Length: 617
Image 1 (cartoon, helix red, strand yellow):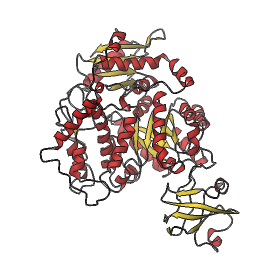
Image 2 (spheres, one colour):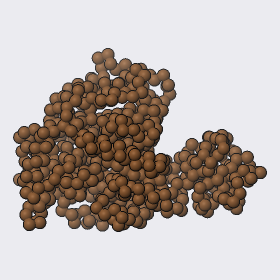
Image 3 (tube, one colour):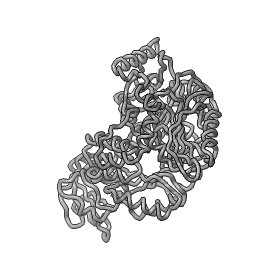
Image 4 (cartoon, one colour):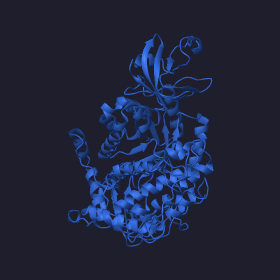
């Protein structure tokens, strides 16, 4: 029966992509007519921005007849009510109303209660859901309990702790507040610890220095003489935090300050001093991040501060570690071995941050060793030619999907919204492209850490992500909902084929589409099976049940997965029955609807069977 169902997939408008695209565009044009298509230009001008009315319109999703569909945080299911994770219904609104409330009337904050919709839609309505995840960096603007709760309300799945800033006491308080939000039972927020890494920074300055093009500037690693005593020949000088800086740079190298705020060319090395000439003028302030174009500092990936921060993370049982400036797979393996030895019982995921030029030649090996990756495009774009960044991003997403591992795309996604309440068109396109490539998550950094409009930025990212899946529903095929070809190398191919669960989960996703299932239900202890189903990119929601709260938090990173904690019973039938009852109670599935169940539950006498079942709720 399984083979029969897979041979006859349901017809889709993707078989005629141009007709599907035309219909979708026609509906969008029709929806924008009727006196509401007039564009009001922004008073700032010249930045490719539009007024609140234009953005509210472009953020509105349309159903098959062109009517606007609302976009609350909860999940719409089978034409019923939209529900949050707790299963409670909320007031009705539209995406346009939500976004308009965020940026209209001079308001700088969103309403405290985010409306979610009650609407009628067909089964597997992609447009009402956001299957990709959102990572938010917690900072001074969002570190209060109220702010973290609001971020959760507006769509945050994972909270990022940037260990480059803040004390352990500050981060401990943030973790406690996140755990308090999770204990409310309404949200399940994962915690990601992002190490500082071997950053090279300039020293302290008495005052900001404006450097003009052609001006000479000294970078020194002298520690015995105050820098001001060295300024007899040149008016400008600062020290560098890294002693081997003098050996890592050569005459002709391009030195970038904070990724390109200003840049210098190295013209001479004199003892412990590096003499440069300004190429692009700018203002230099204290403790700025330094990169050499095309090179990485010869520092270990894990510094003493990083090890101290990791010990802090082990004590707080964080869910993810993002290892900065990875250059070699051994950096990942070193951290994984440390966690196995010093964090028994904990199973955090180690993510490789790809931001170093040295990581690119060993990209495949690094991704194979890591549990996932983060594309840190800021420093990456400073170390490799900027035009190569999108190519590397796509390659990382592709390789990780082939290996059934998650990818976070980060940095500058909504950078302008640190200052302005609306995004640029380029930023919206950037988010869309990252999701269409198949990334599991997109990340907000300064936008939520210290920006002026953190909730507005989160709402924009949430709305844009939902729009991607709405387009797919209308026939615009994208990689996010397409299977990955198994052509990533003989060794990797052999390893994947040796695990029958890979083929089994792919079959489950196809089966769910073939029978028009309301959802896929996964029973997993480690999260492995749920991650495989996620990578198969089914057309219906994935609900993972696990007895481990830690596993449930880890699954917050995986595409399309909503995780629930549930104690497994010795009798698998009881566990299956309880899961269906829970989903029915929450309104996520209705009586007599079909669910595809994937499990390796014990049957009896410690004997387990990998199985795919089709059940009626």
